[in-house]
Image (cartoon, rainbow, N blue to C red; front, side, top):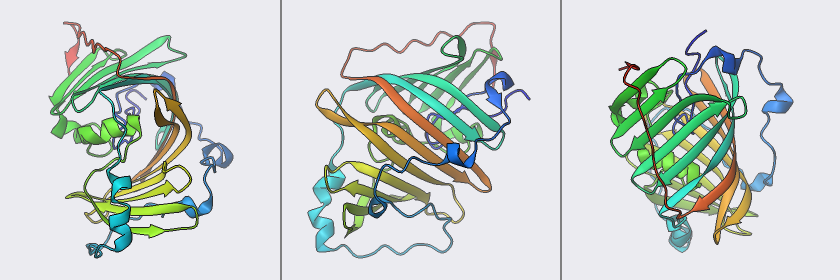
Length: 285
């Protein structure tokens, strides 16, 4: 089957999915053991599983603990550029795939991704995402896509915001918004935030203030939900970065799992963002 699914740069809320050849996918599903998320955090640090929202959720009143943990919520990884390579295992309704994604990010400006398969020998797609535009070259089908970012929901499992895309790679909270309430657990802080679209639950480990789990869901009833597990923190240029991520996305009855392993990450290097589009490629709207 051609165009079996579309790659996610993460979150099929933010992992951009490009068209791909059936040669890169297997209809064989992973075993339960293979699909299980590695239990690297204690159970007290875990956030609730994604919930399909029904009635509107009332915003709780702030508490003294909320004010105390405001600096933790406001903390973000400082950077001008971020780059590296992500080894990705993807599983969706139509099958599974393993691929690599070299990425380059200029904060709040550009996200560049080059996707390959078969150990880097098979170029699949190249994408450049700006705050308002989405550009993609599909090498296998000799197609090009040039659309506004607001229209990306037509080719992805769920809508995507630029900030969510870059935050997914860097490891910052996916959604911004305001901190509404906070709770203290045995080994973690549980923070609850919201913006105009999303409700977000985050679990920070008390031991080092790193994010362990993020649970994101839409305020709209029956909207998509995402659960992200962060692991394998490493210090890169004096910044603590999670180099292992597992994303579980549910959109209606369809579920997607994206497992990422970041390699060769670098901050604040001078980067280029090349995107050459062959003239004979078909424009896909």
